[in-house]
Length: 117
Ligand code: 5GP
Image (cartoon, rainbow, N blue to C red; front, top):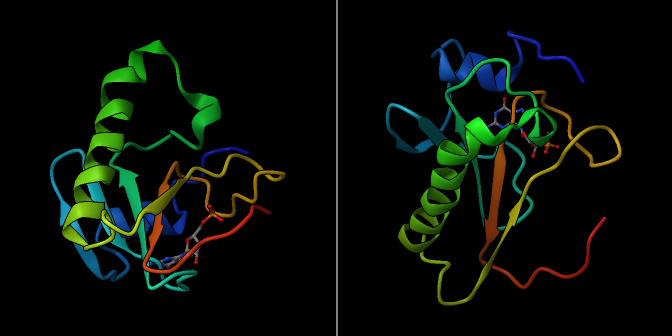
């Protein structure tokens, strides 16, 4: 899957499309999924163009990719789903169910989640 600089998440990062933001800093943006699969469904995206999916990651990405996980933990706490539990999901490529070609981490919680696929 090639990087498309006009994918919806790149446009949200650039402020060209609106989003319901729950967190932002110089490296990341987090906003509510437009079609939530759970009461809490947050998308966390790195402000990095050309990182389509986890398939693009190299050792050099380890610091920010690690921070993304720590951030997800923080947002889960702030969104009130830490006690009940939650799911973090990274879809990669067509068979992984990825539809937006900009690496993103799903945070799902607020109901019991069962199974995969
Ligand atoms: P993927 O299937 O690529 O892992 O996840 C893409 C997610 O982005 C889907 O859950 C979809 O509902 C969400 N999404 C697609 N377009 C938009 C949009 O314009 N705004 C927001 N907030 N979410 C979107």
